[in-house]
Length: 630
Image (cartoon, rainbow, N blue to C red):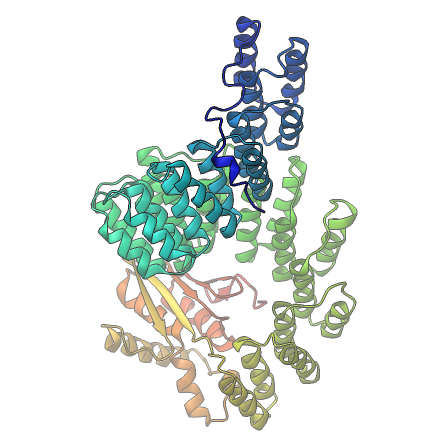
């Protein structure tokens, strides 16, 4: 796609039709007023008919408003038809439709229209330039963007601030940081908007430290700049740093907006920082931050993922507007907390409310069926996807069904289901079946599944560990050791077990046998005391879950220093009696820890909530909400 070089050196320096005058200016004002008051798509065509009857179909002022209206209401195809019927469109009409294509995500169409404009010898102004640069940036059209930049230099628009901003955005989105930095360095020092664009560009490519360098050099940061840095840290997994930047923002008396709140709630969700999340919720109420469906969904996610499903339900009940994503969040939250039947009921309620479920909805509700062992209901909903809702199952939906069959112990049926699929299985689906083979002790099928994963090149650390565990649980130590050696040779690192606990608004992290914590001596003293109490209650370590060929005493030691046990002990010595302890673990809770935590909850008269990779476990009075099915 190329631009005419003649277009930017043509004789005309004014857009066509700029001096045209309608016959009846009063009619023009009335029609433009009607267009500006229009709120719904179905109102557009009657007004357009009136425009044609009034012989205003070629009035550039009226057509400009009509194009803007169609674009704002996402009626871009109709806007394009109107434009095509305009005999001599000027630069303003071209820009209006280019803007419409950009806002509708039709970036290539926007660039093509700009090409058409310059090839028609219509001189672009700074508004047209910024629009097409935006299209090039979002469409990652680097070469076309470079051509526009050349035109910018020829037209003498390189000093225009808006044009510079869009050039930075273009190069940043395309990963051309040297060019983006050149434009940025030409901006006035301390330009907070330019700095925010540069920060976002860096974090989009995972260059957190480069973004932080720009952020630290901004003397007077506004809400957008703070939010850009917080959002970037969250998207790159730097949750603790994101929360620290948010605290610094508070110390600098900069008030957050809805976007900031959503970013901070996301960080709280992933860290399990319930108390901080509650504080953010109260902050919203205090300063009147709008409680829309986006913020409401973020609150539901935060409370659900931080272990307080009752508060999530309460937030959902207070929402005046709910969209499909709100229901999706609630279905997922209920499923995570072992409330599978309630999650399915929420799904039916959504449909009764007239909301159409989307592909994500079915992933959430099928996961709920899987967590609750609702096999028949799961298949009923799965088949209803196509027969009643017209949604074709994707790999994620098939994965849910394989997981549902695997958890229910129907391993051969799960394998048969995979072989009959219209698409190839992914490593997540095969990993779920491999995990089910370990749980149900089917070594032969486990080997078959693992072989598929390895041969396809999809084996990650979880695959190797699962296969090793399948061998270990069958006492085949030699094969288990061989698999772990292969994992080491392939350079695939094993994800270490990690547990987090929030105490006094601070997140404390523990690894297996961790000795880094300043209160390590008190933690291990508490752990020893608990072990003695548990043994007097009849607890016997389930050493068979330690999948290494070592003596039982060593196995007991390995079990006792699991990260979630250390986090629980720290919680016990650091919080008041009867306080609920909330733990977040990155891996699945092992059977022995599950049994032990039930007893700890009984002995200490505490409620202990553990979020592992699969779901939440609410331990209370010697029992768990999962009913030992997870």
